[in-house]
Length: 462
Image 1: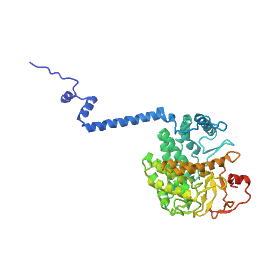
Image 2 (image 1 turned 90 degrees about the vertical axis):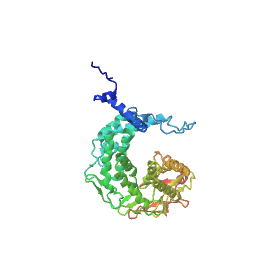
Image 3 (image 1 turned 45 degrees about the horizontal axis):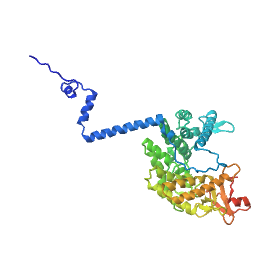
């Protein structure tokens, strides 16, 4: 008498014995049982990390939580100066600024979209920067921050069609200017939107400008012919042009995984760190592209020198406070600036300013450039990051002087520079010797009572 064998269909083990094809669920259960406890824990952690990454992406793309972040906390005085206070709330201020940006963008979009610049008087456009649409590229991150996403998307659509390996025929692209505007603009827009087309275009710009580093020393040339893929040879480059590309190329390496960009830019820092200087921490503005020596020029935190000092601090911050080279170089420069370049007005004890030095760091010029007004912000940031409280007090005094530079004019606009006077009523006389930007201090006559009262007179380039 034959007997009937009944096999439960829900037993994965019995299915395997009979040679039946197991389901995916039964495979997972079997593999899970075979794992030891440690492997199971690692598997669960991996699953959680992947789920968190997916959720983060959804939040960025859909909910965009950055739009709701209130920003840094600002201490507002409880009693306002109602007579002079034109901004009743931070929200109103933001809306006014956003409206100004929208007005500027609409004018550019109507009359110059895709061009480098709008000429607002004639409503015409120009491509004086090689035809890369520099205004558009540089505005992308601002549009995104302000929530002008329609305008942002218009810009992105245009940018993705631009060939950054080409420029206007015969144009020699300024290396530094295009790094801080085009490369930085695209990198920032990518990090905000996570649109990978922008990263691809940023790498295209970075590659187009890389020939600048093709020098015997590693100090970059100031211009590149992107149409031929070669740099334009030059004997010298100014400090700010060579030393204000590191953050952008470092970020490009970080995002692409290719170290060549950071390596090339970092070599400049190493060369200048080891270069002979007239005084520790102070750098004359002209660098020989062949020898990497600081050959000539004034020492200034104004034009042609300014952002070099700023980038030392920001590179230290960008390194997550791990690279001591940048901290050491920044502190050395700030200590030297405070010792050799900061002076106090003889007419107003509340006014401090940062003057210039000649290439030997021995002759002082009482010129305070408008561009140097970034220094108070840099000092304030450094005071917090590096615990330098005295720098914050100096920052306040310098910022007050910058305020006076605006407030002293009928238009409310600051001049390009102001010239202070010393106790002997001497001011500055520029004398350009062989293009080396040296200067001499001479007697300045005719100071009015108003000029003496203010402690400075407004400079003129004419």
